[in-house]
Length: 313
Length: 271
Image 1 (cartoon, each protein chain N blue to C red):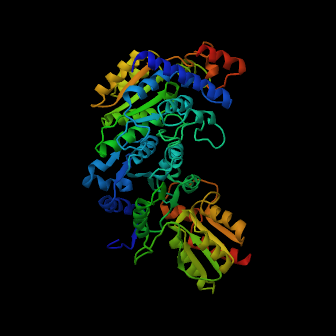
Image 2: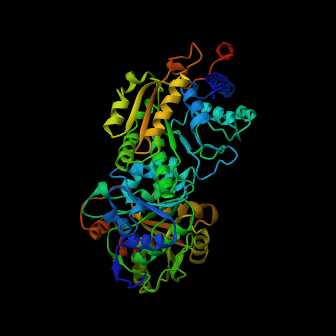
Image 3: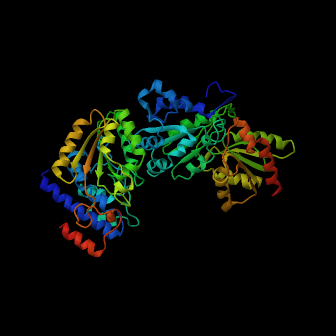
């Protein structure tokens, strides 16, 4: 990205990214009356015929996106994460089973949607879309990685789910992102414990590693921005080289990145694991950072979990 | 094609339907039998298709939204050169391409995956939008049941097709009056579907005898003449289980196979 901001919401990458993609690819963007919020609507001015709105009707949008894809287009759908879930069976039946080239960019993911409260906060979307065969599932750590993901999604065949956020989060990839689907990015080396994170928890994981280093604990930080397919080689390497793992995510712990990592490690190399995430509850209204605080999705939450994992080695 | 010839094909397709479900010991006879004339006239005289080139970009699309009615779909695909008749024996068996509900591309000629009801009109709408962007005037025909119209997604699609004035999209409603558990008017009365489509801004013809080849043909001619300006719906009055006396208008034959005696009796009636 040019003019990398110090902080930005990952959703801000969508519209500009699609504009760039439309210049080189046959994409069609479909929308369910949230194109301004997701920023996807940016494409409408330059390519009006390639932006199709279906109104507040996510089920129709999902199946129609699949139909458009059968005629040779890459189709990009966007809405809020909770409304993407609204049409689960349409994503399953119309898109996943026939393995069609439809990308779903879901903005306002996680609890950092903030003031709108529990109904607008997707605590389960990664689990929901990771459950679908053929879907690639990604969560960018910042706006730079999100920009790279838009390009990668358009350039790689098949259904994708990408969770974007509303909150302005610090930019990590100030020197650019080398995002490759299915490849984790080790942001900090360390031999004592590994912190695996995605989304806005990656920045917090880096801060936690800094905090731990003051006590002489060297934590490895891995940005696992592709949830499916999981980069098991980076995961197994972390387990064997550091012997303890913390997974940090803005999602229910029982169905997200942590659960998938635990499943992979259980049969390969079980090491002590700790999980920083949402514990079987919904969110509530508040400033986005207040809600993260309430749920324990904090720097201290991660560093405490790292110490617990270490003590179990 | 002469009416008599089409009627003979319809009878042959009905025999295939009954045999497939009987041999598989499961499957949906009733809603397959009600759609036989609609699909046979469509594939014989209106659908621009080529079984040798099932991926031809400019082909017309047939979307089976009532995805449980695969017996009629597979029998029609066999009749029109997409699969050998012998393959019908594999229906619902392990390793078959002919699953219980439609799967896109299995076999070639199946244009969508279905089984969860109410999605086909959206899928077909999307195909028309895509074809339009590609500069193709190919038609998309979507076959739906009346019970299926319980699903709200259909009305989302009906609204969007009208809003976008989608041309060459033709909805085919198989109004057989029965759904899984019972008659539609007892389960969830959809009342006049034709009036609802009109209210959504579609061109609609109803009261079509869905088992009379001439009436079905005339309806398709009318639909194609109207479809250049926006979406069109044809509502066919049909009989569930049509062609076998004890299956006709009988909710028991929505999703149940005939026993040995019933099979023999059915084949006699369809000979």
